[in-house]
Amino acid sequence: MPGRQGPKLLSIVGFLGAIALAVAICAYPLVRRLAGRLERLQAGVEQLGAGDLAARVKIEGKDEVARLAESFNRAAERIEDLVGSHKLLLANASHELRTPLSRIRLGVEFLKESADPRRRGELERDIAELDQLIDEILLSSRLEAVKGLDQREEVDLLALAAEEGARYEQCSVAGELVVVLGDRALLRRMTRNLIENAERHGAPPIEVAIGREGSHAAITVSDHGAGVAASERERVFSPFFRIQGDHQSSGTGLGLTLVRQIARQHGGDAFWVGTPSRPSRIQVLLPAERQDVE
Image (tube, rainbow, N blue to C red):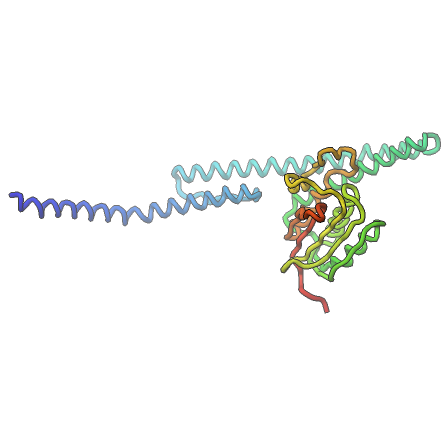
């Protein structure tokens, strides 16, 4: 009797194993399909988290995963609408500020003959700073809103930097001829902001170097200032950031923000690259269009 129970038990175990194997084989496509949907949903979440507000996921099926995908798409759409509304409000507010600015200018014209010269000069400087702030807010909003460049042309960075450097008394420009493909007006604005930042917050002389870093064009602007703390090297590119103890400095607080925005719009980026020997140094890397020019 015990001798016959052994083969019978083995047959039962074998039968159960066969059933388990059959269930696993049949369930594998379903599990793999579910895992694939979850992976695509995760990719959409990561895409949204990386800043792509247009990220959406495909809704597949009618189960809990599909409902989760629907909720994600609704949330992403709401976030995109809110950010878009914020950008539109900022742009419209900036445009509206130009009306009182024009009235102030008109008032200054009437006061030119009778107002105190010192007070009039201060008022005119305030107007110029307000005008610059509006202009930079508008440009920043436009760069955030658009996906690509309006214009593309070959730009000689060395020549452009030399033109901008000539506007400043204690600024020298050196390097090699490097050509990039981009918007000349934006690249000029970026270079000017870099030099103006060094002039306002650093110490002369200012040195601008144009060169190559691998396949990228490099614009490096250095001065003889003290630089910033390591913890603030990323924050200097944030809007309206002020270095501690530097509340009296001039500027709109958007100069380096625009530098990074313009660089990224051209497929590059901006970095604080200060060293112990030269702590105040910023570098912009842009994809170089070609290696040489005939």
